[in-house]
Amino acid sequence: MSNSVIKIVDLFYNPKSVAVIGASKVPMKGGNRIVTNLHSNGYKGQIYPVNPNYTEEDELCGFKFKKSVLDIEGDVDLAIFYVNNRIVTDIIKDCVKKGIKAAIIQSAGFEEVGVEGLKLRDEIATITDNFSKLHIVGPNCMGISRFDGDYDDKEKKGGFFTGQFTLTNYKRGNAAIITQSGFLNGGIAPLIFHQYPNLGFRYIVSIGNKMDLGENEFLEYILEDDTVNVIAIYLESFKDPRKFISLCRKAKQLPKKTIILLKGGKTSQGMKAASSHTGALAENEKLIDAIIKQAGVIQADNFFEMFQFLRTFSMMYKSGKQFPREGNIALVVGSGGMGTVMGDIAMKYGLKFPEFGEHSYNILKSVFPDWMPPNRFALVDVWPTMEKAMMDAAKKAKSTAKKSTEKTSGNEKNRNPFRMMGSSGNVMEVIQRAVLEEPKIEGLFTSMPGGPRGNGGPIDFMKPMLERIAQYPKPIFFYSVMESEGTLEMLRLYGEYNIPLFSRTEDVAKNFAVLVQETKNKEKFSKIL
Image (cartoon, rainbow, N blue to C red; front, side, top):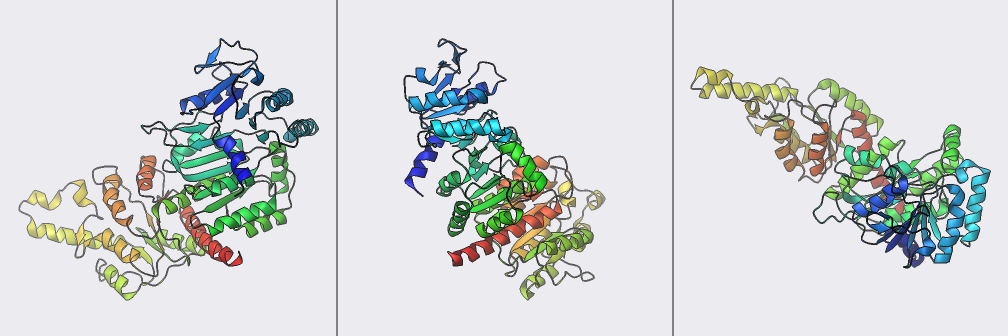
């Protein structure tokens, strides 16, 4: 990584002082929220609210207003613009005169609006001497975020957040996002933190129209951070395709780096939308596909997939699980119909059910009834084992009962079929051991147990099981057939063990398939480079 790129990007992520141009005392205005976001999340540098409509006696978050950046006595590393596009160029002149080296222009109304916006862009390029005097992120963006700690950590490390939406409930982690769509660092960010409570971030950057800096500079910077394992990128255009391909291939040489790409504007209709959104120029669909293929990235088809892939890879890297190569899976279900449907879905994504070896098969046989032995291939329908476990438990209760009430009653925990003791101990523990210790199997898919929360329901039952199976080096994916009360609670619980929980069966197979794809991509590009 070149020192020049380090220094340039570092001006945005680690400024010692920030001027917020367009700051306001009105709480609902973006300029107010930017200052509040910086201050409330622990930014330690100096903040200068700038607005000619206030006097220098006015304050925001304890910081006195300035009428112009030229009125600021100290140095300013970064200027954040939240003003009308028509006055941006004049303020850019003041920033250059002040010696400010970096600016985030959150204002819209540039390339995306046509000729007048293009004129503004050209004026800024001239004023900054083609951005050599002042580097710019944006315009038409939602700024950047650097996460130094969790939202609720005692040290209040917070981070550096320049967006106009107040961020809460975030976690620092091993993921990053580079996006041309501002909402990923704006209004939807809190929803991401809520929906994926165990997914933590190190960086999010909204690059907007990419007047100066774009995806390549930030990707190059983030690739050098060893704490980041997975980077999701949303683009509507490629600024320098060759450089992008080169950086993505570089990631393939690094042991713990994965890049996920969602490319918007692949169709004529999508490209029309992208042009009005970020001023993106039309790109040939075949060219886009060629870039993606040469880059060796994981491709997402929509934002939902992008976030799911991001979570899956994040958990894989955090847990140190072995990435699958052949796509050999085991499926443990409580319904023959579900097994049949999942078999079709698995094959759709190139996944296979291998044959059990004799050792694993004999372990399985020990918990199955004689009248319904297990499959030889790795699809395990546990219903017969539940019936056998219940019959074995009933026999045991009958032989040891001292009172008639003890024959028919018992607490919820004792009636849970999965907890009932058959001839070989806990049924599910035996099945999972047989599956996860089978050398041919690379991963396990299984459904989340139903039933009430607490009193022997999923939460009470799952904790010890998750602790046990999390020790295995193979990825384990759970799915819930239907959303239910306590889904978020279960997401948090599974996430504590870096085990993803899915609400759609197809997503289970799709997310495992991209792990296989990433393994093969790394092998392929390690030979090319």
